[in-house]
Image 1 (cartoon, one colour):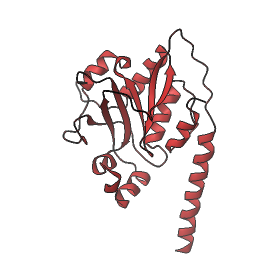
Image 2 (cartoon, helix red, strand yellow; image 1 turned 180 degrees about the vertical axis):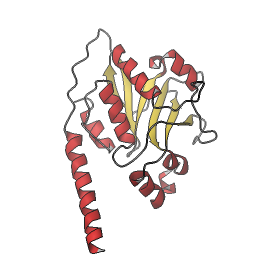
Image 3 (cartoon, one colour; image 1 turned 60 degrees about the vertical axis):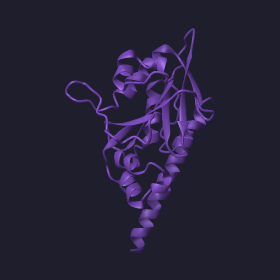
Length: 210
């Protein structure tokens, strides 16, 4: 039992150390230049990152599929463990078994889509070019599961309020590929400087704007 506990502790330390090192090491994408850049945003609730796009930067077909209501100006996209999302509307609802399963067992995922009328103060702005906007749209859209008719699969009645919805997503959530790794991957594909690997939100935020 002592050896098992020691092994588990060593694995946790190795994981955290690797996360810190690879979070600090930046990617080095080639600069993308254009005449006029637009702003997207990255936000965190303290643990979980999300990508936010102004509605006008979401391509028309994707915008229609999301059924964005009138008066909405920004849409947030967060990817994560399906059970964690649906069973933990607030951090006070978090159960140990839910967290352990999310981290150590490959599990189904969901996309959390939230609508906003106005930007929030803590959002981190990122300037990007039109070609990058197209890449980011593709990355987000391709993270959604669809049916045979290519329609998004909404999880009925799963939203936390009137301004958000959940959809079935592609991929599995583990401690190796977390919600923050998903955002990090989206930034990489968009050729935005970010972490080599960052399972936590701080690594991604550290590089934005540097």
